[in-house]
Image 1 (spheres, helix red, strand yellow):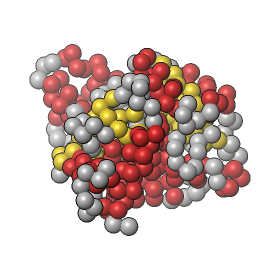
Image 2 (tube, helix red, strand yellow):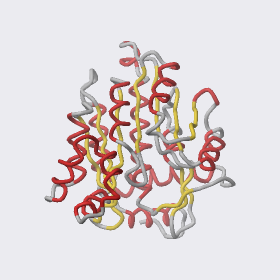
Image 3 (cartoon, helix red, strand yellow):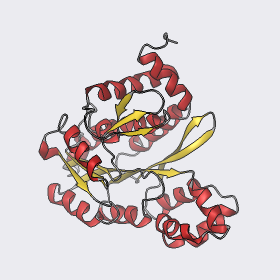
Length: 310
């Protein structure tokens, strides 16, 4: 499959889901490059659920594949400047061929949370999902408790996708401690470097959110960033060493050419299955980094027949 064929396949999936999803409730709007992030979620969710529900997993006592989306949004994304609608991460992750046994979605905005509940009800029965309204950082113990009340030994895929730096490092640490078998996909905005620069120039109002985002080593990290060390590399080290998820890839999402908008840190534990989980991240990186927001926009035009096939 060529890179264009690969991209067309997944853009088509997201637009088809968008067409099927109710548009009468709240939506959210992002640039075309956002589809690459949603494609990443769909791709890994499908592979993850297949392995987590497979014979090898069941033979080792794992009883459920669980999806967790901590900054879920309303479930439907309007593409800036185009007018197309595509599935957001909650619908994308739970609409693959291989289904999760249980999913939890957290959204702080009440209108978006209610919109998500209604939309997910188009695809999932009520016993398969729950939408929590609130600050995901504040309700991590509740999230962990809910999952453990449903499943004795789950394998969890956690997607942490804040708009900026709203996610706290302590949130990821609690999830990591709560579930030995948990994979992370974490969005780290390239804007963290700009925040570090503002703090360095004396704008101390940004310091609390920076410290929450990076945890107890925030001061050391601040120094490293201002000395030219890449933000995603620092966060990546923490995911590998502190969270104990050493296998995976960091995927750059670009809006045009090499202009990076954010990085997806996709990491898994050392596991009994060996390479399949991490191999999925490697294949995903190879494909996603061949595209950008411009090629996604072009592919949307092809899929919608606004432009003749390539």
